[in-house]
Length: 202
Length: 202
Length: 202
Image (cartoon, rainbow over all chains, first blue to last red; front, side, top):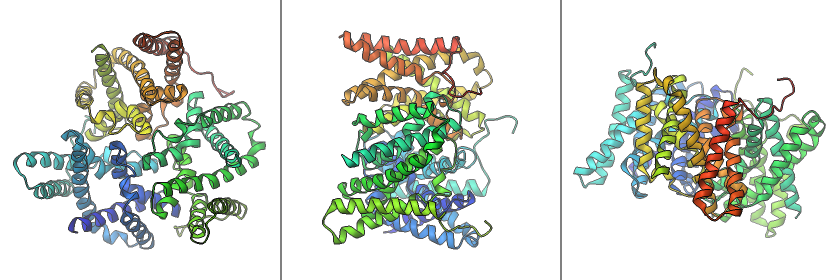
């Protein structure tokens, strides 16, 4: 129940981020809706397709569909006021990636995959909706360029497998790993930390 | 038999639309062929991958492969004269999306999915070949910006499930829903109707 | 064992080509790593998803993950000197596509698909990592525009099925078809051969 609320808040934040990018590109209603949808469920969809868990998850759980529709309409109607919600949306988004990372990891464990692959699946679940959104909007994915986003997911994933060595309470491991993602992301944004530059002349 | 002819005409129209976009981008023969292929079968391929129906359909039915090859060579050879065919191609294309929408919906029903998901699958079958074509050509997908295209598919899909409540003759439902897609699309183009703008200053 | 070494060298060459493109786009460490990964395994991943062989192959064989990590770090550290390796990398890359083409074809045969589809799968395995790389980097895929790359794979594929008619030693067929890909690619680059232009005014 608690996780379901986080899941919905995360989906809302992802969908609204899609709406904002799509409207910036002056798409029509259909385009905006598709981008909202892809941003919200794209990461999990890619994960499910890669591990062969089909039909992919949003096809068998209508909650996502309704939440994304609602969030899209809300964001279009209130687009001039959405700036006031920026902090809340950032928080939802951050909490969302914490949850999705761990959910993705556990799907990998269920499919009996190597821990590194599980961490990759978790990161993909949290981050690749945004990657597909940016591809459809004809942009180089923003998380490939500047944001500490995936790094937070990877650190959370490493924590997950580290804790799992010592603890048997899987719920506890789940929560702590998710919190690590959230804290790293918040600190990185707060302290303006980014990955070390690979380029000398920047 | 009748549906097969429509299917082939639709495939031809989709493939030729791919050839034209690819040649506009000055691709070489291989690029033109791939874009023709992706435009023609991309929507159905994505649908099959999402619901887990693999190998995807064009891999087990060589008709598509031959038709797309033929249409591509035809379009390349006659590229200066293809303008005279514009009306026919538009008609084939429109009839094609009518058929593909309903085919996609019925695949969703066979997979026991919710009507909204089925309509999404139908729309995807008809429209996402063009979306993938535009991504490969480094453009924002045209159907996200201005054309009433997906909307016609969605209205046809709603009609399908509405009629199904009252009628048992599934062939009749199939045909009427497909015709709705075709008529909405034709009217929208004829009357220059588009989705209401989301932007004030346009 | 011999094939495994080729496989690893090919993976290294593909990953480094990804690193170079990603660094040219000034991506951060995470972006560079993802592009290296996608370039190296993208073609095989798409193939596996299309024929429904999931989890896709790199998820169950950690060698690829380690090789790609290593190649990426190597390429980032030595980025100023990588020009000296250009010839070796070109050779590895060419040998790699020879191997991947035939591997892809044999996966298609195992899945009982038509020879044309098998050749398409082989070509995809060898070429579509680069296509996805270019899409993520917001470029029109380079192999759609100028390089004889896919053509070499297709010719190798045709050779494969031709030889198979007359020979029973499948290892021999495997090696010859792979060599054809390599030789055609080397000759095309050496003699600056490209596909005939489709455009009069070029």
